[in-house]
Length: 193
Image 1 (cartoon, rainbow, N blue to C red):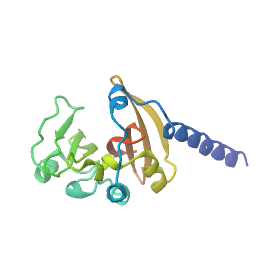
Image 2: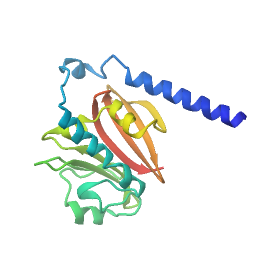
Image 3: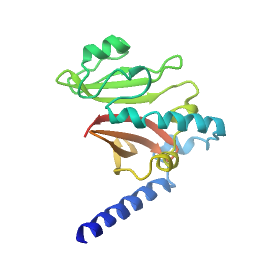
Image 4: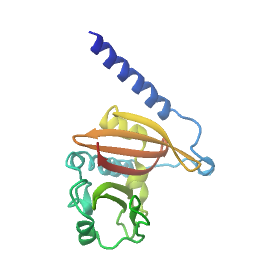
């Protein structure tokens, strides 16, 4: 009985933290405050939800959908990455850094970090063109409505920017959605638990 009460309390506290993040009225930074409220059409929202749901099953196998689906976190090497998507636009500057691949001509942007020459983490930045039909159209409300309560939700600092990291456990992997505000998804991270 004690275990059931602890689990129920954990779910309740997680829900309260999540609701606080969803109803957050203050923007994450001054740039967010200056942006006008965006209007997303129903078709754009449907496309964004399709993109969101495309991450669900591949994450169980340590993969992202699309052009990098052949890469697996913890298994694929830097040589595999270079063979599949080529040289990065900006190479990492140290062992813990990320190789950056810019979004161009409808292709999404990625960042890849390595540990012992195997992928430690992949970040998905989405596309720059028609961003609202990609991760730019994914909101916290859409994410939680589609995937349910997350395993965790925490505020993180990125310089002066305060972001919210919403994490889902997908088998042996973590899929983390990094939001600048409730309607501004910055990127998605995939890494081992």
